[in-house]
Image 1: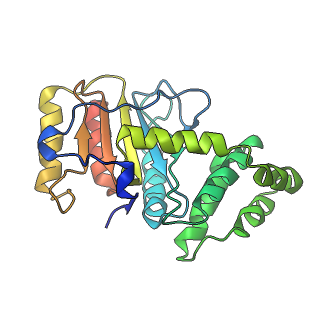
Image 2 (image 1 turned 90 degrees about the horizontal axis):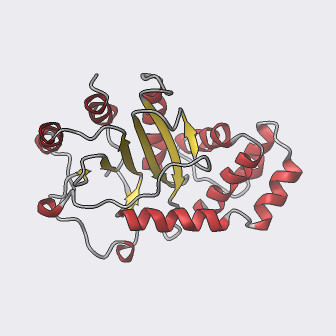
Image 3 (image 1 turned 45 degrees about the vertical axis):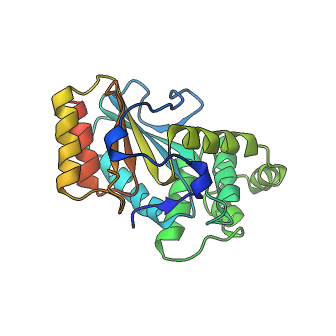
Amino acid sequence: GRSDKAPAAANPNPRNPQTQARNINIPAVTADDHIRGSRSAQVILVEYSDIECPFCQRFHDTLKALISQYDNDTEFAWVYRHYPIARLHPNAIKAAQATECAADQGMFWQYTDELYKLMSSSRTLTIADLPRTAQALGMDTDAFNSCLASDRHMAKVNREISDAQNAGADGTPTSYLMLRNPLTERDAQNLMLSFARANMMLPDGTSLININEHRNIVSLSGALPLDFVKAVIDVAINR
């Protein structure tokens, strides 16, 4: 497997390979987003993720490796948004809120990286890990614990869950590459073909890559290998 699946109700109309690529509604990247790189980059990957999801942990490492291969001001940037699937991961919603409490202290990425590092040791994330990690990073733990207890970031987390579902994400991780310059029809077809040839699809034949009708948003389902994500970016920036 490459992803953790949300309950079926979250996406009552599974995508059909023939009707893929029609419409993807995703909120624009704003100053409120957590971004590695610049909003003016040619390609911005918007990832909807779940801290407790093992596939997300794997993909987090992939994206950390990818981000270092590009100019993050002009070529490639990475945005992280929340899609905790509570039915599968009981601590994921609290963990998402914890990353926002870390963001209040200017440490979103450092904190998120550390939580995924904990997950990489094949252990289950616990609620106790959340303040413990904040303390290990030298954060103001009183402010952090007060923030976490208040649930004050729950509205943002819920909004992003809703945004992910409206965009068609039916599992984690799901990523949307927002392209400054649309793909040519030929490039789009070649990318779809390359994924099909590599058997990058779900058991029902649904491709793990989906391109919208304007060819300026590419969705990727699951923790895809680095080379496949890189192939999309390189085509989009004409590398």
